[in-house]
Length: 310
Ligand code: FES
Ligand SMILES: [Fe+2]
Image 1 (cartoon, rainbow, N blue to C red):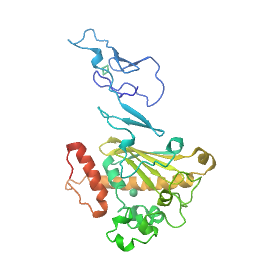
Image 2: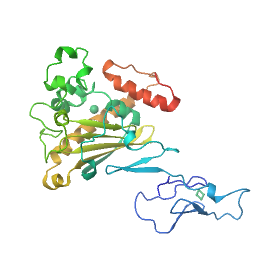
Image 3: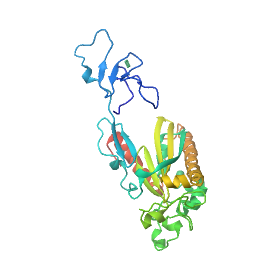
Image 4: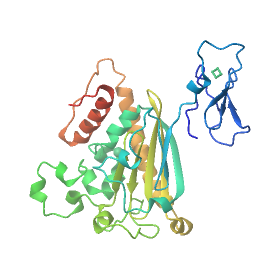
């Protein structure tokens, strides 16, 4: 059973532990002791009398849709959850179909509370104009990022370099580098199912707005999950996933340190962005052409609030 942790009486939290096993066969609210079965049905209301027409069957716990997708558990909090975990990925970003996601194991977890709204983080994720200034080491590893661009076609003059396969134009990793790590080297076997293009890309993103994205590298996968804690607070959980044999044999510090640095750099500048937005004069910014993905993101948010896009 998957349910919201919220009582149907006056909405108290039911369970205060974040993990563990229930000690009884009923879930009893700590406030006025309404009790629910493990299926979420309301079975006991201790009031001396009940309102006219009150039917316990009308007040089960709010159910949550859950699906298991290639080793990941996806929860959908919508009242009428439609679609599948697979369909939650942005088709433009892909779904890491050639990575053996369901066999990977966790090598490292980073949890961090960022003092910014969740949308600030996604805006940052959607552009690389900040890369030359904010991500010095990443810009050396992915030279096109050092030009403030995400891919070849972001350069208005890209046709002049259309035949140039140097990574500052094509978007791959610097010469000699294979993956995102401090030394640019892999630290375990390369996943066998990747295409040549996926191997030389250096990083392949799979985005599931608004709560997570994954990055596939040739020897590991990194997931980043976001949970808003408040208007100016977002919890970020990053996880590094490896093939079991790689994790047993590999020193992953070189890999973890690099990704951690990039995330810390992003988190720090997102907090600076959030502070600046507190100005009472600032109502809207202006997007540069390189920020076209932000426009898409803004439309995504707008559509969900108003049904309209621009
Ligand atoms: S809020 Fe749960 S029993 Fe009253
Ligand atoms: Fe960044």
